[in-house]
Image 1 (cartoon, rainbow, N blue to C red):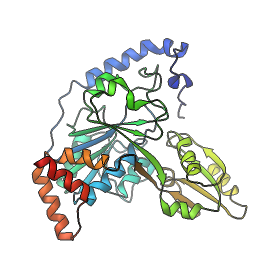
Image 2 (image 1 turned 45 degrees about the vertical axis):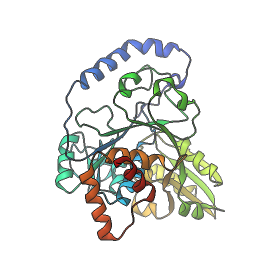
Image 3 (image 1 turned 135 degrees about the horizontal axis):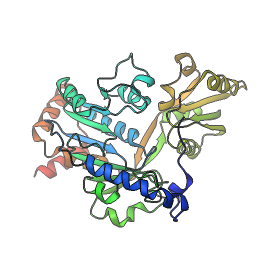
Length: 358
């Protein structure tokens, strides 16, 4: 059974609950300090980490997918490292034999886009990935894991939730003190509407801050237009998924929210099937939920693919450029791959790289 986050985590005002739990938050601070004393392993390829400071869904996996696609378009061969939350695997590459129980739901999604290595032992997975041909690594979560040196660390924040009450677990949603984490962060990505004015957070001074919004793919929008849609999701914050569909003009007849990483039972599936008996009604869910559903059930629903739309389209390309500028040999190899495939590199990124090299 997964516990629901207490309401006072997201309240800016002082609360009795946070006050009572503050002594235990000291243990979180000490444990994090001890963990960060370990020396990281430096790898012969660049490492990008998309991580968070708060518990719950902040958009790390969509950002990871976005960066994977951009790197692949440039001619690179990125592999993914993920903890595989909810899975039992300690290390190894995700294969077609894996399920959400063995590798975790997020790992199954990532494996559809790039070779994905799942488990707690990120160092072992990273070395295996490089041996298997990876020329860069993208970590889905892992800012609090000191085992690997990160060339680019991106802090992802849910714009609607922000930093909550700013307290450490269990008094608040923070995994570690913000000031300590920001010393290891190179970039901040706010995902969704900035309801807490994070752009002007004094602690972020000196760090580049960019914003992106979630959007359903055009194919999904065409499929769901003029349909009676029942949406369901078992993610960190299901409301974000429902709001995205509504903002896209989708008519939602009903929404059903399940806990994050929810394992759908036969009773759940039977209930969902019964809701679609009316003519013209279609079920819609996230990719994260779809990988946990039986194949025959997936045939009868719309799996919504989420894309990121950046306020500044140059932003993600620019910070990738800054990372790769220090890896000229890797850039040359990627350009050679592109030439062999007769694919033109992204014009913005190519110009930016040229400017930085000069």
